[in-house]
Length: 202
Image (cartoon, rainbow, N blue to C red; front, side):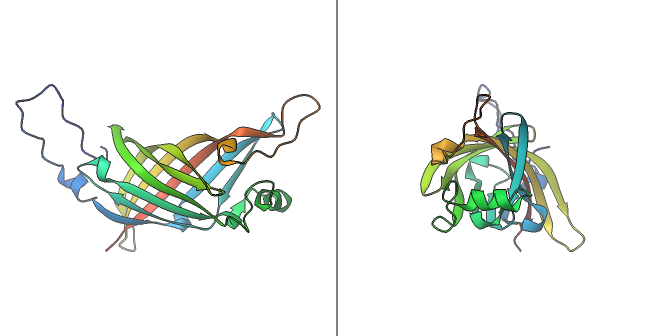
């Protein structure tokens, strides 16, 4: 069962609009993303032969969920770029440098949603503006709703898993090095992975 109600059949003009499921309607509200139970990750191809994974440790975000109309749902995210980690201090330092994220000049990456839609079942899609290095480009994220629950501390939580792919060069992240065997050191295509837990505001 998804978080949003299903769209009615456009060909059925005689039936009254379906009532909103009370369980879904109860999820409508404002949520704050819980950083301690959320992962904002990425995967890049390295030297054409393996994957390097990383994530961000410092970020804030909010969600507005509408249990009856997904188009009214929104998402906002602010990520501190200096919190990037890949398991290698040298590599992290390079990513923070002028070759990549220029974190001293551009300390924050932001995402602001512009539209949302239900795809059926537990699948949704959210589109918005992703800003990196002062450049804003559209980003579409496919999401799966993992469910809702009240934790032992009384917090009402919802969970989502999401994925997207971008070309880093679209945001000016074009540094690379050629390999003697052909190809490049770092892939242009980056896979983004999201594992989100959010707490409903009182």
